[in-house]
Amino acid sequence: MSMKHWAVAAMFATLPLAATGQDTTAGQEEYMVACAICHGESGKGDGPFASVLNLSVPGLTGLAAANDGVFPYLETFMVIDGRTGVRGHSGPMPIWGDRFTATASDLGPISAEIIARGRIAVLTDYIESIQD
Image 1 (spheres, helix red, strand yellow):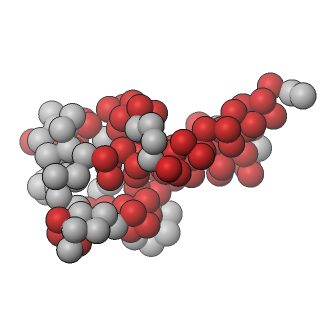
Image 2 (image 1 turned 135 degrees about the horizontal axis):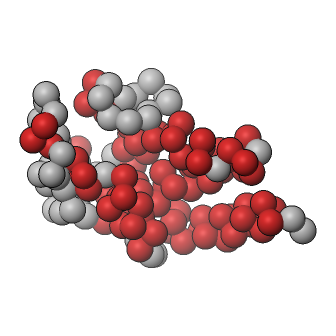
């Protein structure tokens, strides 16, 4: 089995943890690298880059409260992905689906897409875990 096949197998092995929300460690790590710069380490919208943007950065800890107490999982996933027509902040937020796919492109298009969606899923799980 080639190295890229092992990487894909490892990704599939971790998806059940992400899908059940049992372990948000990977999501927290992903969040600190991709999101905290704008949304803040606590998810309150107070990251160090927020002050230089031309719009206010939303907090992420009140998404469930703003949705009658139900975390909007699919909408959050789609906003992070950015390729589905649902864009965060009306456009300035990076299109993480494209970025995550590009970083895994050497594994082939299907594997890269699986990895990108896994990264978005763990991010979404983590954001769900920090709801007020």
